[in-house]
Length: 138
Image (cartoon, rainbow, N blue to C red; front, top):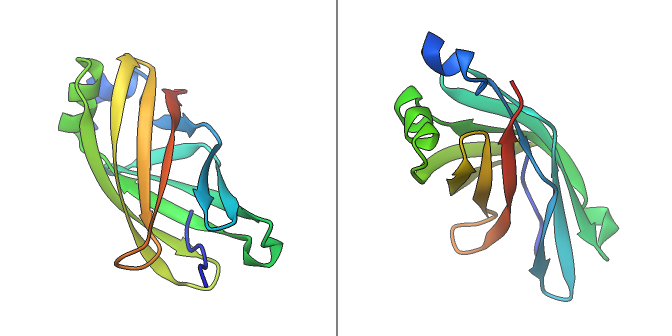
């Protein structure tokens, strides 16, 4: 049974990269879907942190919430500003203190927004992949 376990330099700060919004996204699972809702992520010391909610349909009893962290270096933010795709890594932790690995990449459309792919490893062999968009908010 599948159980979802989620959630710079002064020049870069001046460009408004301290807060990022990830749009709500869904992915299919066996006989259902998982919707990932992410609160705005705030960057401190090279790590974006925020809360998430995961809604599993039709298995509402598997819904959960928690927090996750995405590490993005100052150098990677500079690459995003130039329009380059960057990869990131992170960790999610649900309210039951279970951790999962996160990987992904961001591909800018413009300096302030673009596409993002987030892979959440529920187990070593099971991944949930969310394709959505992001925007820097300040």
